[in-house]
Image (cartoon, rainbow, N blue to C red; front, side, top):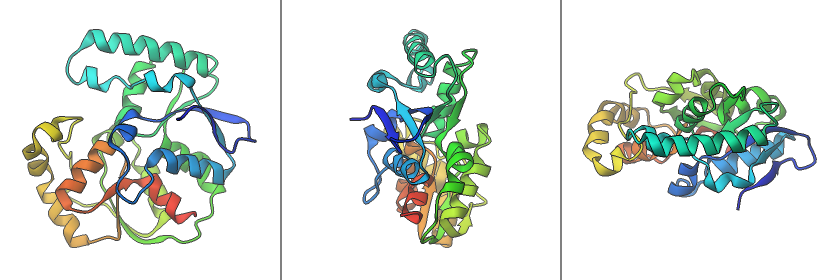
Length: 243
């Protein structure tokens, strides 16, 4: 069960951490630990503490409602998120960290005008943890799948920084695009994802990197299905490289 202080429990809390529910719902890639546990391990190694709100199990970024036009459900969740996180951050004194890029986008929208800064876990890692981490054994090569939300959030420089720390060779396919998974669309209409990813999947097969990463669990599922290669969160790669 998540809640309380995680990372280096002797350090001063630097942020409020809201692990995304999609990571728990879909679980980690086979053989991986998932982004939430990887991020906690990186925090510990970097000597940084963050706090997870006790009400974590009842919080969501609201995307399941906004994506389907369910305004009332979104309104209820937005009020709950604002109440819990305004309190947890001391009225915005601490930033909020989210560990799935589309959820980061959702929380930014929900917390608009509250004075709370919302950061993606990759951006926080690149700016606050990277210098405190020792990359003991970088992996040979990695291919990145940028996501729509990582573009909207201008997150790619942070993703590339983390990937370059963790791997000797980093590749972004020229033909990358939206994977079409779109929350639950890829589960209900797998032909959408198959069509959207065909060109990128062919290019990825030709690159044949040792690892494949992204920044959002559902996109990782879509790309895994499209390519046959296990996609995981880029912070999981940094966790492997800094063990």
